[in-house]
Amino acid sequence: MNRIQIVQGDITKVEVDAIVNAANSRLAGGGGVDGAIHRAAGPGLIEECSRLGGCDTGSAKITGAYDLPARYVIHAVGPIWQGGQAGEPSLLASCYRRSLELAVEHGARTIAFPAISCGIYGYPLSAAAEIAVKEVVSFLELDESESLEMVLLVCFDSGVHECYERVFEDLCRRGRGQR
Ligand code: AR6
View (cartoon, helix red, strand yellow):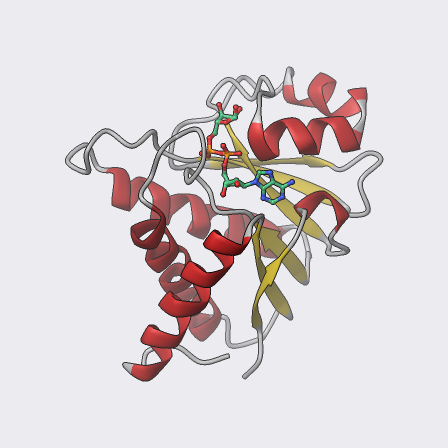
């Protein structure tokens, strides 16, 4: 199986059916990857987001992608890191699961994720990367009809990229992941 790819780059440039945004719970736009996605999508995106009534932390909502090459943007709201005792790991895992479910529900066959919560929200990178990789691997293992062809984990810089590669290789070595 070769359905996970870890790549370095700008998620707004990636040609997939759905890109995931690391949004805030008001879906109000912001900095980081959220700012980049809204700039590249154009004003239609914030207008559509403003009609969605926000989104709970740990969940996700889907919109059109406007001027982006993708068909959909899935706005996932990751947890703000507060030390790890406030349910952050399960909230982050649930962002990945919910985004993958939404993609499948909308017929997307390819999806790209940024490192949700790993920027402004301060989640420690290797812990977050492990959750991201594990959730994607488990989802793909259960997706027997292979409705998802490819999941890209898009790392903005080389530090994030190296960390994801290391986490993925560790997981494969332990026999729990396949690519
Ligand atoms: N492509 C891919 N990854 C990117 C890009 C890009 N163009 N730009 C940044 N990243 P962050 P968060 C990486 O801060 O921590 C916003 O204000 C970045 O290097 O974007 O979930 C929202 O509105 C990091 O590895 O998201 C929220 O208020 C990762 O994306 C808040 O930030 C996530 O960093 C969400 O914070």
